[in-house]
Amino acid sequence: MGQITETLAAYNGTNLDDRIQFDLDSIVEKEARQAYCVKGLEFCVSCMDYTTLKLTDTDESVRDFVVDMQKKLKKYELEPVAAVCVYPQFASIVRKELLSTGIRTAVVAGNFPTSQSFLEIKLAEIRMAIAAGAQEVDVVIPVGDMLEKNYEKVYQDLKAKREACKDVLMKVILETGELKDFETIFRASLIAACAGADFIKTSTGKVPVNATPESVYVMCEAIRQFYAQTGKKVGLKVAGGVSKAQNAIRYLAIVKHMLGQEWLNPSLFRIGASQLMEDVVKEIKSMCQD
Picture 1 (cartoon, rainbow, N blue to C red):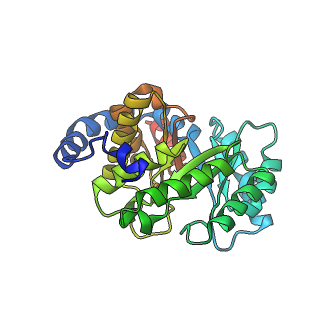
Picture 2: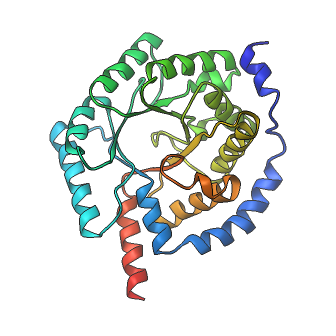
């Protein structure tokens, strides 16, 4: 039995199904309705990793993406987003455009979105991205090994990535839609936390099933238990298909219900999105007119 397998045995991720459904259908729905206000929507913007991960991204389109975002924030008098997230080769462009804004430069690296390459290549890409200006790196868990219960291999992969990210913030993408069941999501969350993840993140946005309320609930439960045992706080990032304000607020309500108000700040809660800001602005304008 490997070290990480022994560690996992100290946590309980079984029989979550009934509790999840009860909490989501009653408590979370009520808290989401209360949070659906201008203040709540503005908070979602401040926790946003404003993201472009298109096949067609270029130096010029990424620069325009950042400039356009800053115009929107100013026009609608919104707080700065937490970060702008791009492919690694655009890190230097984003970092330059964000100088003096307080907005951080994030990248996806380590052979995103599959993590299917030689470890040395994954680590080299991470280091190159950091050298180019990345302050945050989103990496993907080895999903196949996770499904086959090769927990030690998954842990060692993430530990190596953590070492490559030693001077920056690391978010570990679990790709929850591919992990099949709640217990596997729970264990993946804990392995990432034990390996030193600053955040655990739902999805790449590149598979059929991305973020869901149920997967976020399970990840929060893992974070809650990890904090209770170690005293270490791990953040949560929801990503993949979060394009509507209503969905963003629901995820916010789940995090608040499971982890408490202290997790509701950009250092522990993020929303990865490319289209969410437009819907948030539309909803804020609608509320202000009523």
